[in-house]
Image (tube, rainbow, N blue to C red; front, side, top):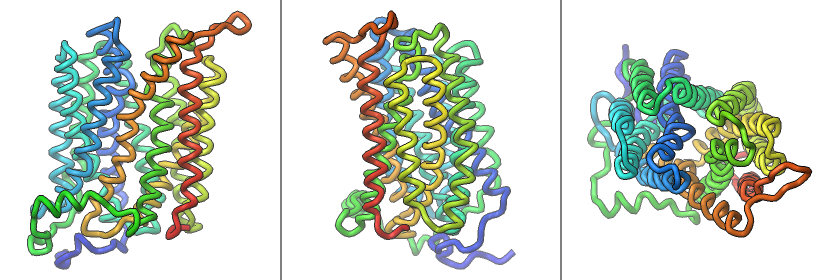
Length: 429
């Protein structure tokens, strides 16, 4: 086997990686997203209610908001550290392995958390570790996948993300207790990361190619000038808006089904909606990601997918029924599935340079994480204000939540604005 040329870690890839590598990366992604969303969708909400039932919304918003803030800081930071890693194992592998082990340990801490402080600490530690893993997994794609295959691989990773979300929610719903849910998720995270850790194909960065470290230049590197890189800036803004719409649409589903829809078993309802979302996403994401690769166009797919995903918010706002929630899950799955695969490929084409892929994708990932900070507090404000001014009305004998109506209209508006502004990106068709 021929040794890679010096500096190969910074070269633009031209040979597609083998299928086994893509499969291993997808397995690691499944475990990663199960670690994120089993807690976010079910376990943290249940734990907030168990610790302080009278203030469950506030506790849940506080913990998820602090965790999301941790994510905003840690994803680009660990991405930048991975860019500078010169271990023989490669730049990304140490952070995938360390993130999986650290994330599992934090989930085990959450399993025994019996106070808001310990719950918040455990979730912040989990977010830090899982974002180290996410930064490395994300950067592995432009490291090893040619541009004309990134829509397809992005689609496969979107499927893996969805399987992880469904799996995480399924574990949380089926294990029977909060502690068992966290423990099982921790085991799944580590086991699914193993195949990638054993065959990462990661390339070593020679020490002489690592830039000299100075705190000033290191920290300044996280600012990517919109004047110098306008397409990167527009890609960041549009992703933040669409993800804010998605976060507002999904974060409060458990309480929406309980308080607005009046479903008798909201935990199982969240699982059913997540499964429908997954089916719709799987049915569309790889097809449209590959289609985008073949025609060489990204923006038209991103624009329409954001509009379809946003329409789910209108359905949730206007119907507030179980059938309406089912329709919204299908719309959101179709729209967000296409968006996730094609927008990821678009983003890899507007990165400023190969030497800082991990850091730059980490900055992009702030647009994924920041909505998780904003959404809980924005939702708490909206629901709180509407509750004070009269939160429910009765139409045709049925109670209707004005608070959730306003919340999901805001979600729709964010998704539409994010879709329209994609037209400002010039360098990608």
